[in-house]
Structure formats: C-alpha cells, structure tokens
Amino acid sequence: MKDITVKPDITIRQAMKKLSEYGKKCLVIIDQTRTLLGTLSDGDLRKAILGGADMAESIHNVYQGNPIFLVSGKFRIEEAKKLFIKNMFDLIPIVDEQNKLINILHWETILNNGKKKQKEKLKVPVVIMAGGKGARLEPFTKVLPKPLVPVHDKPIIEHIIERFTDIGCSDFYLTVNYKGKILKAYFEELQPEYDVAFVDENEPLGTAGSLQYLIDKFDKPFFVTNCDIIIKADYESLYKFHQKGEYDITLVASDKEYIIPYGACVLNGDGHLSHINEKPKYDFLINTGLYVLNPEVLKIIPKNKYYHITHLIKDLKNSGKKVGVFPVDDADWIDIGQWAEYQKAIDKF
Image (cartoon, one colour):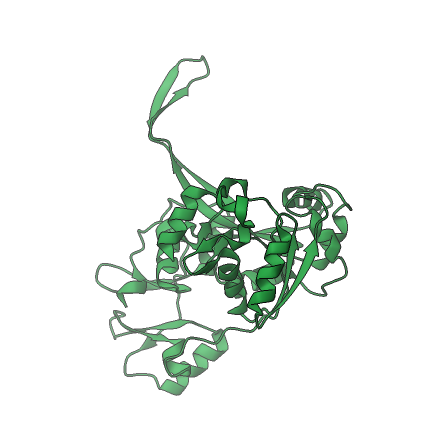
C-alpha cells in the first residue's frame, strides 16, 4: 500500500513521478492518521496540467475528495466486482469504521486472479519516421542508420516497435531515406511477426513531409513517432484521450523542470534592480515526438516539400483544427537522439 498512498501536500510533479515509478494509474490520498481523503488518477493530473496548474503546486485542489470506498467487514466480494466493472476502477480503498485506510483492492486481485488488467488490443497503424541522418549520434550513424543504433542487445527501432506490439499494433510503416537499404535489409533478415512496409523518400522531406505518401492509407487515427525516442506512457490512454477530445492531432509532451544555477536579476520599470531571484525554476511541456493523427490531416501536407510536424501543427491550428496535448512525466520519455541522452537510456534499460 505504501507505494500508492500519498499525503495531500505532495506536488503535482511528485504525484506524476509516483505514478510513473510504480506503473499505476491512481493514487490514494491519506492524512497523517491514515484517514482516507480521496483518490488521484492520471486523468486528474492531466486535467490539472492542461488547465494551467503549476507543477510545483500541491495536489490539494486536484484529487477527488469524494472517492468510492468500501468498509471492512461490510461488503461482499461480488459487490466489489460490480463496482470495478461498472466504473472501470483500477483500485478501491478499504477503510474501517473510523474511515482509516486499512487495505486497497486492486482490479487484478478481484477480477483477474492476480493478473494485470487486460488492455484493449488497439490494432492501430504506426508510422515511424526513420529517414533522418542522425548527425547527433555520429560516428555511429556514419555506419548505421539511426534506427539501428543499438541499445543493449537490439536496435532502437525494435525497442520502439515493442511498445506498440504490446498493445496489439501489428502494421508498421517506416519512412526511409538515409541508409534506407541497410534498414530494409535488417528487417528482411529479422523476419518479424508484425508487418513492415517502407515509404521511400527520394530526398529528405523533414519530420512530416513523407506522410503525404500515406494519404488514403488509413481509415482511423494512427500513431506517428520519431525513431529515436521511447515513451513509456500508457498508449491506450493516449489513444482514448485523442478520440474523446475529438482532436485532429495529439502530441505527447514531457514535463521538464529547468533550474538556472545563478541568481537572476529582475529589473523594475526604471531599469534598476528590483530583486535577485536565486536559482529560479521553470516548468515546460516539451514535445517528445510521439503523436496521434487523424487520417484527414494528411491532406494538408504539401507534396514534395520539406515540411516539419511543427508546420503541420501550425497549419492545423490556423485552419481551426483541434490540437491536443497529452502530458507525461519526464521519466517516461527517453530521447536517444543525442549522446548525453543515449548514455542515460543505456542506464535506464
């Protein structure tokens, strides 16, 4: 229980890291006396962040203060099963007569004999943008295409694909240009159980230009990912977030905290020093390079033109389309596109 019970004074950032660390989707909020105060889901956190909440704020105004719970000795297992199924809960707190938390029921324990909740098989197409030169990973990429740079016993691209095959995806489209023949040969030799189709760029077209070749290929929203990132977020939740929000494109954004290791001078209106802000902290949501796109947005992409995903997002917004943002914890984003991050990725795996 200690892994998922927290006090109400922790910050939004700390709550996100707690969920990421233990791979859970919900926390239970208690006070110093273990009195049940509420529950906090990953959806509650996303709503708060997208509503403009500061990551350094406490979760006091974010968690659900009227949770569904059961009283020890006063419920039957069948009653608990009905609550889980009706509400699709991951957990239900159990309290005593004084509302003190004494146990937590989990979906896998009550309904699945200790096995994790079965995720819906999405069977969604995945496009991997694999045509770049990977200049930041030289000299490796002088020899290999960036997707084949190894992380332990297999290349980056296999780690990426595994994240999708785990949720039922089996149709992959790889846009290729730089050392594309080597990449094709690798998959020919690998003979994977999933399907891989290659989309050839005759010349570099940026991070979105080659998507034009996939117009009319899909009949439902699909994933697009860079070939040098691994996102450990819940892809099923991401896909449902995109659909529920009726977005045209959804980007996954990682929380990043930057600390300036100096005293920042703040001036007043007369150009004089107002005060010194010692080692200020700044929060940003950083675009990770993982997206969900509706098929219709591909028609906006110009033909045979160098065109980035940022251009697509801008053009969509200018035409009145909806762009969603799905926040994830910094620890859930592994960027292998540069040497410093590559070394961190090796340590994380």
